[in-house]
Picture (cartoon, rainbow, N blue to C red):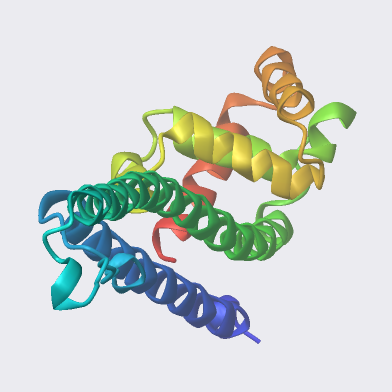
Amino acid sequence: MSQHNALSQHIIELGTICLKHTTTIEKKKESSLKLINEELIPRSLRIKCDLTTSPDFENNPNYITLKKELQTAVSNFISTGMEIMKKWLITNVDLLIKDQCNNVMKKAINILDGLYSYWENVIGLAKWTNDIKTNILLLIIKIYLETDYIPNTIDVANFLEMPPNKILLLCSKIITKNPDDIYNQSILVAIDQIQLDISEHNSEQLSLHTTRNINSI
């Protein structure tokens, strides 16, 4: 089975994931803009509540005062509720963006694993140190996101709406299966400090083959 045939279903699934999450995020953003910019009151806050009495007591001073107090209380409730909902919508969009990045990168890492295995068979085993072998996929992603080898890295960051360093940290959590930020950041720092026992030729060849295939996804 060819490389493209082996990965085609995974690539289709990656596209589906991107489309699904993008549609959800765009709809939520649209709702947020209507609430924030147009001050559109959500149905759950459209409360109609008024103090009523018989015609005989409509001019009673106590009734008039309490009627106004109730109107003020309802108005304050709607206003407070609006502010709470605005804050949640902003938080919700941020959570959806992180969820999108997480799901996209999970599938992308799965594809990258297949690509790396394929090219490892083509060009032979690289002479990685033991430390780097454990996190080889993270190293490749780090090269992709933090070097000048790939001209469209900014496009990836813009699509995912997250800066490269946050995408990289999220990828580290996926690969290590450890949610702790400090732990994963220490791994990323360690990768920077590792001296790879590999020739410049093989290193450039691996980067070229890997990034070329990442761009084809």
